[in-house]
Amino acid sequence: MFDSLSDRLGGVFDRLRGRGALTEGDVRTAMREVRVALLEADVALPVARKFVDDVTEKAIGHNVLRSVTPGQQVVKIVNDALVEMLGADASELDLNVSPPAIVMMVGLQGSGKTTTTAKIARRLKGRDGKKVMMASLDVNRPNAQEQLATLGTQVEVATLPIIPGQQPVDIARRALQAAKLQGFDVLMLDTAGRLHVDQALMDEMKAVADIARPQEILLVVDSLTGQDAVNVAQNFSDQVPLTGVVLTRMDGDARGGAALSMRAVTGKPIKFAGTGEKLDALEAFHPARVAGRILGMGDVVSLVERAAESIQQEDAERMASRMAKGQFDLNDLRSQLSQMRRMGGLGALAGMMPGMKKAQGALQQAGGDKVLTHMDAVISSMTAKERAKPELINAKRKIRIAKGSGTTVQEVNKLLKMHQEMATAMKRIKKMGGIKGMMAMLGKGGLGGLGNAIGGADMGEALTKAGGGLPGLPGGGLPPELAALMNKKK
Image 1: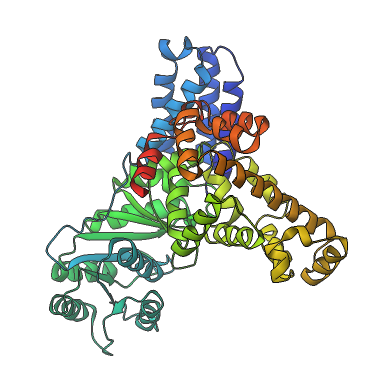
Image 2 (image 1 turned 90 degrees about the vertical axis):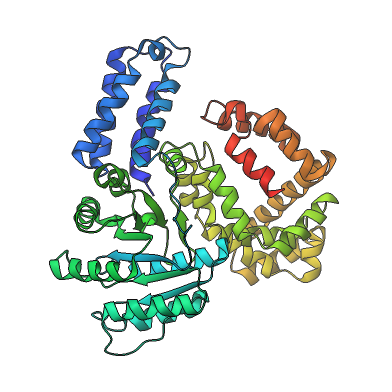
């Protein structure tokens, strides 16, 4: 997401950082390019104009132009302005009421409202331990109620039984009664949509809202519609007391204009972002983290959270035990590759790591996530004994493995080399005192210190450059937010 905007802004700031000193003219020229980049990303004109004016006013100040690193200071100002434009703080669902808390989903047809309802229900059940019921109030679209029932089965969330011919207000009344009687914490109402905003749609939503009195009214909009998404949000906001917005298909939105304009135009926070078709592809919208991704600074905290959700507890404990002994065979490597796929693949991980934004293009050219699939195929073509003892794999075995996996001997060699390097790293981690020693080194010596210990001077220098100078990563050390999360995980 935001790829085109991120690339454009990255070029502008690379030029600023490359200068030892900045003049007011340099800053104003750069800000003109930023304005063009925002408009090309389909950001609303008033929003883009105000953003650039605010940043320019701060960036041409005496303290910035006379600072030791003026280019980096300008980037910091832009980062802060992006966070403010996106909504400053993450906005959680307000469910702190006597149960059941009512969440009403509204939006146009085709925006992904029904699927998003199931995604949020799954999240509330899995992450927050809530007992959730879903009810479809869409009597206009064929099979809409059956679709929600099917999704409910998939995410293991209860749905209100369907009574043919019942009208939306009556369904809402029945759902509310059922949720109270059966002790549900949250009731999610999936209302009907239309192809466009009309009075009949608004009247129906108001009637349902009067009956249900929802704590949250979430508008679901398709981010790929760009400026139209903002216009739809404005129309709904004028008619219904929205509490937040959910942007769908953010993974396909390279421009990001809808996300950048939404809060400024409607005054409503973006609460969630849909990042794929799978029912687990939903992220809480954190303005600071999104700003970091746009400016190529990564999103390490989200990366750790995604890892915590994706990694199986048994696998993690087994790996920790083997790492403590300095052991790492091809079965372990296969487990790591599987976890990377569950976390979104190489491209998604690179986009979250500081200094790795530019590496995403190189990863795609190298085959992207197909590389992970090929590696898994190579390991699958090995015998159990070969996976446990890679040193047994001689030239003859390599030819057999390559033929069996549909790859080449060169690819088999690359995988074996990768395994050998990771095994060596595991032995070095053992010498450092295991995971605790590694975390201590992250806190004291930063990423560079850790790189020196695991991969030698070259890796240490590379990681120091990647981490040094970034907001929240002074000298490559742990950002405070990540350090707090790590301590919590312990």
